[in-house]
Length: 143
Image (cartoon, rainbow, N blue to C red; front, side):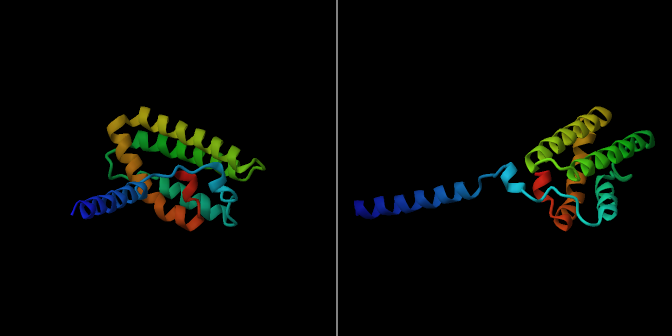
């Protein structure tokens, strides 16, 4: 009887350990994105889709003045990212530079809109970026 209890306890613990390991998050490294940080052939389509994915729309209650500021910053951000992706830098260097640009954009949006509205903006943008990431195979760049 004791052997069966120990045996079942070990099996249960093994299943729990496997379940915990399955829920771990993997942060991409530079080697995970090798070759994925190049500009796609359709550069204009990429630029148009990228800008469209970053557009907050009018449903978040952002003022027209702030929408104009965000649009200007987004255009600059997309141009910078495209310049980085089109450069001859290594993928690790590209990832570092794009991460810095992303951080700058996040700080700008947060200072412009405040934490609450910025959170809603980023949530909406993440949803809009999903098909973009798949279409251009850039998911790892934005993780």
